[in-house]
Length: 264
Length: 265
Image (cartoon, rainbow over all chains, first blue to last red; front, top):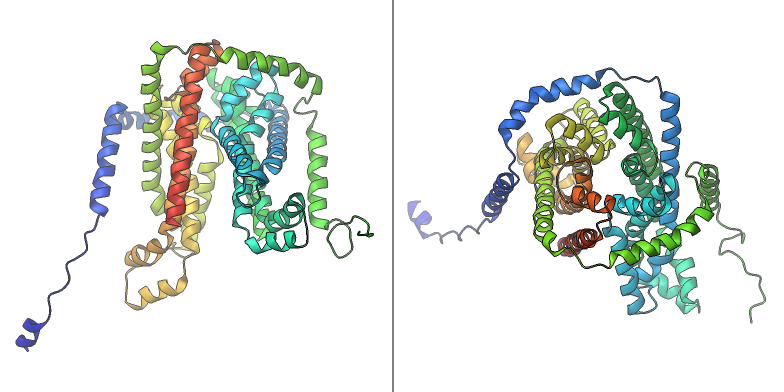
């Protein structure tokens, strides 16, 4: 028996497992960051009681101004809706140019891609600040800012969906003599309509969240009211506003999940 | 050549029902809400020259002395992003397992975690940042807290969804070897969902960077404070470098995460 064991060939060397190396590098980086940002966990621990005391101030929401909140909320939703519609229109125009397999020429592809990328990279609050400076206060600059920013996302999503469509679908249509425009209209959009609708829902969802804070820079909606009440330490009203926003966003979240489930 | 009338490529030649209904409802909603957003074409047209004015103002000599501060603040923004994403990652892994239908220890825990995650991601970062700034004071700490709080909600949900679509046959295979509860999740669910996890983390990193860039607006650290200040004081010499640096950093991460995801999937 023992001879057999000895005569067995040696086991191959265990492959090198890089996980611990990556993990320690990650932890080291985290440590450096904590040090650099001068975060102190003592303060955090010390502050935990304070935080609970602080959060307890929100425990008595005051719904006296509910009708005004609902009005502001409607404005917020309208801002998000118009922003999404603007984003949709811009994205529908740009997406075919930004899809590698539908673009008329490489130059148009580059331009469309860079344009979408630029719109995506500009934070919507910065855009809102700019539009507020140009248009004055109100929800309109907010809707424009949301539209420009999310057009970048939506256009990119659409373009990527176009690129994933089986090339044969496009080929079949161009083989019947369809122009590029017709290929986009009758092969491109019908192939991605479910996905596209899902993306639009996602963007609307996101825009409602963002619209509720755009008020901070004077772009209308419920955010300004929240900001004011927090600045004036009106915790009861802040709590009511947070609850109103929370409930709305939850309803929209469930609705869009339900709709997306129906689509698939 | 063709004598047929122009018509839609459907059996009856009419536009398809569903898209028409969706379009009609959206247009109706838009028209109804037009007054609410104070849509005014005259105002829009009047704003165009002002936009050009603004664009013209942007081209001034950058404020060179400000650049080192810009670098520090941008670095702070990136550090906040990284730290918040890491914290959220560590916390949302177990939550994701508990919120996945096929990996949750108990249906009650599944529903409770799901609802918890929905609540966490409902409000935007800026609202939480406002609340946390009032609670722990100015600085990057409330920003990191707000970012990680919200992204736990997103990441937990995405993790749960990717765990739910793993192939159940491989899970059965590991069960047949007598794996324990934890072993099952580590060696059957996790490896299959891993590529999705990496994609999610890259997406969240991207999202957090964008959010971190504006959190300074409410005093929660990062470049946002300088940005808003420059905008409010019409300090164009600073505004342009700040905008460009945000653009560059966001674009670089965007490209990197796209490349990374494509290589992985």
